[in-house]
Image (tube, rainbow, N blue to C red):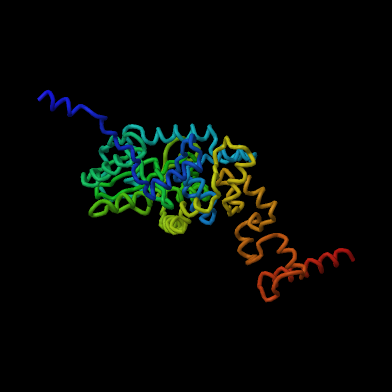
Length: 390
């Protein structure tokens, strides 16, 4: 027996298998995006506001790859020498948090009353609410915990308030984790998105531009909820009217309005589906391209310019890189700097030089309606100037 044990222990021990697991397409893409972002740079998570802005300009490959890679565009814009004032002020942020805390006080009693009053008068009034604990580790864990809570609440036939749930939405092949202010599960099992904003409702109405932005943001949450609902059987109904909660007049008292987001949801879904897949954009970038803000300015600029952008003046209120892209667009004489409506009217004339040449009869097809309109406008301008000089 001793000889047997001795012979078993003799010789070198077996070497552990250190062969790395095979890289799948998904892990390869994540590795590539991490290289673009910078190996030591943490990813900046996409939120619904960014997705709404991304969907509003689906042709911009630059924003698609930067957001898909989790690049901090604020830091990138500063490193490029074109810092942007885009974003929410600290005062507005604190005011919004204080108002949201007031709306959700007492276990969300007031919030559920508003949901019942504006969206579901036929249901039993919410005497009390179930508020499940959604805490978990990491966004993936929180998303899984939210899905479980939604499943349980749907079968409970009672008012349930999910405070800051975590939802996952596939965007151009990359998951985006989204955190709505609240989701309410009705006694009939249907789900409603709640958006809480700090801009006021004066005499029952609010700034249409701000309401429109809130509706586009809520539409992103509706799409994410629909992906969760599709995993359940039978799939619960995600209501296409969301609850927008704002301060009443000049007070800090909450009031609410039901907002139909069917149009915004359809537009956002269509535009997100049209986004060029991130891996296709990444494959076109030169070797060594990186968007880390600590890279030399020349190298960083070359990496950014390797991805085409589609600038429009609307980007100034939606993208941190807008000042940089505007400067480049103006330097190139691109007509997109004049606005999307002007760009649409000018057809195939892509630069200001092309427009001027067509207007002066130096280039362009006279049969082109845009060229003909420009020449008529130039002739009318010349006549007006001639008459003014007489």
